[in-house]
Amino acid sequence: MNSSSPIRAIVTGHTRGLGAALAEQLLARNIAVLGLSRSRHASLKQRFPALLEEIELELADTARVAQWLATDALRAFVGGASTVLLINNAGMVQPIGPIEGQDAAAIAIAVSLNVAAPLMLASALAAASPDASDRRIMHISSGAARNAYAGWSIYCATKAALDHHARAVALDTNRALRICSLAPGVIDTNMQAEIRGTGAEQFPMREKFEDLKRNGQLSTPDQSAAHLLDYALSDAFGETPVADIREIAKPA
Image 1 (tube, helix red, strand yellow):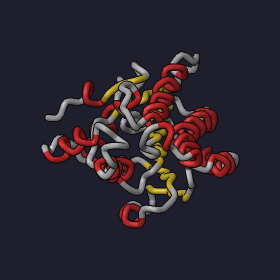
Image 2 (tube, rainbow, N blue to C red):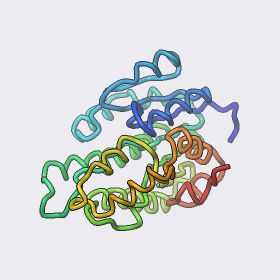
Image 3 (cartoon, helix red, strand yellow):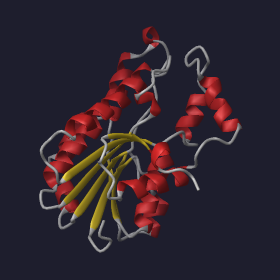
């Protein structure tokens, strides 16, 4: 990628965890970021006032997302950029547990946040940046998209949806758009703490995740973000629509 080209990035869920690390590292690379989240990242805005734009948006509320996409905000942000990058990072692991105990409203929220919002943003980004010669969409996927886990039927299904969306979009004839649904590995975030706090009867594989934490086998958000961005901004991005960063970037 030509480093002199203006690049603009949209990151969902940019206020904590992996999303915050992704946003911070993009900004540190002098790449303008539009952060979409239910809240703002005050310290990041203070450090990068000219480069960071933020929109408070409840991504699980698809009506609100559609309403925002109907404005000119996204088109205005990507205007003039030769490369635009959308990172669909926001997601949730709940509801956890057997199918008969899942709350209907919780299922709807998870599917809205994990699937509907990323697909809506991907379509809007493609339409809003017709002048960009290089458009890239990265879905943050999971090993749960490719391996079934007891208690995680909703999370597994929603992440698998992102994988298959990427496969189908990659078959479109628009070669100015690259897409990849990328599993980032197991990262030490609030989501991991939430998983370890789940009862074994709800998530039988909890002990495995406890062992990963105990044995220091979790990546930090900063480590993962660096690997993800190196790949997202590389010429290789989009060669395969579904990938695992652990098979692409081996830790030094």
